[in-house]
Image 1 (cartoon, one colour):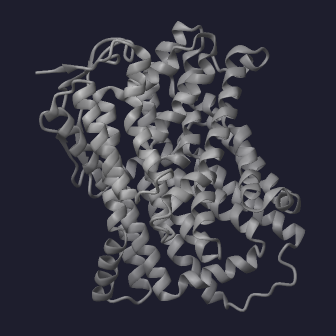
Image 2 (tube, rainbow, N blue to C red; image 1 turned 90 degrees about the horizontal axis):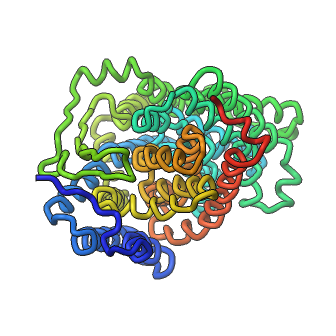
Length: 533
């Protein structure tokens, strides 16, 4: 028996939109206004979402329950699986003293904390976003920054803001691949369009995080490094996305940007007068854990290698009672479509498994015994126990919102904006990532809606499908999942409300700016010439 979604359950679009927004308002209000601890706020938001789905949207209770369980399971695997193993590796480097060596060398390499911020949060973060995604870049960069002396709030918030420019091409182009799958638009055109929307923002993000950290005076003193980092990243992002494809955009852009900043620092002799007391062997041992992690994560991201690992064991289990029992209906989709609900368990090819292998290799190389490794792993699990609950509850909330149709109700409210649709459609991408915590999920959620509405309003579908992904990157810094990852990595659990308040204005400002940019591309000549055909 199937259940068709109803996007106007109260027979009044405004009232239905307000109804659909209640769980999100409850969650954000509990975190930001009432400062309820994040795992309790997440559970409160989930309970509210279930009540709205069952009582407001008339979703059968068993479908609502199944969608919550499905979301919670996805929160545990693969997302929490990645974070757990990253923090396990991090703990090993701390206990062995390698993290302190890394901090000392970075302090010599780039003694100015603002330059450290550009290299770590922007350049390193983009590499890990391109190779792994799913919380990895924020977890790693925030952990490094706090060891460099940044406060937990700055380490968390600035890592979140920096992790914007690379998100649309993250995890070996997974968001673009998903967008291609749901829209049937040419993947190279989508890649090219995103590669024309994001470079202006990639150019300014290094400067943006410096200003957020140390004000305009801080930027006046470091503008050269910020400009080099942003310009090189934006240039490579444009070239690779337009003339190769979406798969290696972040990895190549981040490597080029890192090299450019280090060469610039050498040319400016920014480290003059600061001498390292570390030996060559100490420097190598400091970077070895992260080199091992980078190589393995990169290897895990290669499609052919991932396919070979999938052959060792991958299970796609239809979620009982939920799989193909819910119907998406027009205008969200062109024709009635049964929603799939498959829980994919790929223990060998999952990114978290690669990170776990890297941690075991690093631990062995650092001299840890199996007993010590086991104890450290248990300690890591205990440390992030509340975060695991939070991530599971957040994903459960997101899935209840998705399968009840509340997400589409919010999306349709933004889509009914006529000539101004390019602006509000881009904001829809921002909303999608803020709700789901994933640019990929937002593209799956709203990608088809964007193409349908674009055709109805006389806008190029490629432009608006790409805008869903580009606008979405600005919502990444405020989604609850990312905030929990950041607070966990910096041992700042309980400060999520402060982190949210720190990043929210940045998120909404950047979202408005990219929405204006997409509007110009859609409606104003000669910007319209930038749309690929």
